[in-house]
Every structure is written in C-alpha cells, then in structure tokens.
Length: 355
Image (cartoon, rainbow, N blue to C red):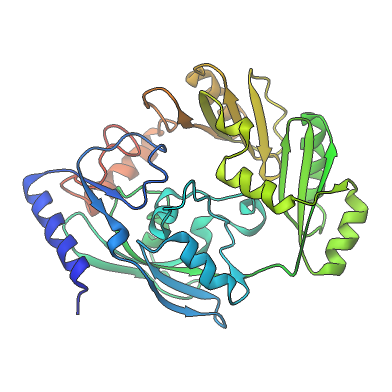
C-alpha cells in the first residue's frame, strides 16, 4: 500500500509533467547555496521521514528521504556504528535525502569511501510519478546500469529520492588528532608518504601553517602510529574536524568565493591569493578567495593536475558552478535526464543551466 505522502507527491509530479511546470525538490534547505539556482514550485521532502529498517548485524540502514541526518546518525551511534562518508550537514535541518542527492563527503572520505560507495539501493519517483526501486540491501547486487549510485550527487534532477539503504561501519574504538607546524608543500609531501603506509589515518588537513592528522582504530595501532608520525596531541580534535566538515572554520566561512578543487594528491601547492585548506591526503584543495576568482584559470589549472574545480559557495549571483562537461559526458547526462525526467520538471538547472 502506497504511503499517503508518496501518493500525494505522485499526483503533484504527474500534474507538473502534464503542464511542464518545474518542481524544486528540497529537504531542509541547508545546501541551497550549492549548485545553480533551481526554479519551480517547492516540494518539501521532510514530510516523508523515519528509519524504516536497521540491522546492525548486517551493517545496513534504510530510511526515508526526509529523515533528519542527526536522527540517522544518532540511531546508528547508539549501536556503535556510523556513516563512513562523514556527511556535512551545513545546518540543523539536513536530511538523509539531501545528503545523498548532494553527494558531498566529509574529512573521512579519502580513507573510508564517498557517498556513492555506501549507497546500496534507492526507491524513487521519476519525472512521470512512477514509483521505482533500484539496488537492494547488500553489496554487489546490481546488474546493468547502477541507478542507485547515479542518484547520488544528481541534486534531484533525475528523481525524488524516497527511501535509501546505506552500508554502515563500526565506530572506531579510539580516535586521536595530532597537529604540527608545516608549510603547505611539506604537508602535501608528508600526507602522500603516509598514504603509502598502513597507518590508521581517518582524516588529514593542512590549514594556516598547521598539519592535522586524525588516527582512528584499535588503541594499540593508534598509539603506535602516533609515536611514528609525531606532533602534538590535540585535546579538541573532534571539534576541529567537525568545524572543518561544516565549514565553520573562519578560513572557510569568511571568503567571498569558496572554490573546491579536486586534483591528484601529489599536485604541488597551488599559488593563489587568499587562504587554502588541503584535505584528503592532498587531493582536495579549498581556495577561499577575497575577490571574484578567475573561473577559466582555476579550471584550467585543476585540469592540468588531473581534476576539476567547482564554485562551491559565493556571495555573488551563482553561475557556472560546475566544470562544463565534455561532449560525451554531456550526451550521457542528457540521455539520463530525458529517460528519468522526459518533461524536464525536476530541479531543472540545478546542475547546469540547460539541464
């Protein structure tokens, strides 16, 4: 039997598709700043909320899209488990559906996987109001195109997430943060050296002349690694990583433009005005610019180092947020959009102005 809220959404989607009237899919709105500005009538997902099933022994949780992210994390923490990708909330209203749709991961991403790595299955409404289910509740259960992971990071442009099944991981028994003085170039070198060793690292960061490393796991392994890596123990380590994840560090929150560069971890320190924060073993560079950045130059440099650049946050009107797609990828995007949303009503323009 279809949930009344889902049935209501189906009618809204069918009506909008018939009228070719855009719908703006939105949860708690904590990531409204991210991506292009969508248009259309609002469809608030928070009415469809709650944990559907949680089996700690199988390391799987299934919840509705409007479930507060804090609720999901609290339920899991009570059984000694966590979401490995350490999702940023960016506000108290963050929902599980919003976290998956945005596809953003926190400091642990380089060491425990990204959002799409833990998505096992989804239930969704497409742009015609059809109730669809993909994937399941175990790993390696997909034959053909993996729609569950395609929904991750799609920003609601392919469908409305209803239910999501995610893989869980045990909480580490011990966590310790070390901090030491280091130049950016030295920090990048050390992070890459550490990456080739069996250290229990769960996060790294360089900011304002300091190199931070978080160790997580069994107490003997953490203690041994701490002695090897060196540095001062940080009493407020978890508070630092939370501030980094939520961008409440002043270096990230006070910029006119905040750019997110994904590059090879071995890429040299990039010489730009403003402040920089380096994460993920050197593979993620945040550029906090005091003035409007040169998008073409930033994207060219990111491309030279094997990656791409995203205008993550800006105080100016948003435009050209994501790196333009190569012709082949653009064709794939358009085909996916036309398959799942033939009328083009779901969050049109959220990823790219004409998609």
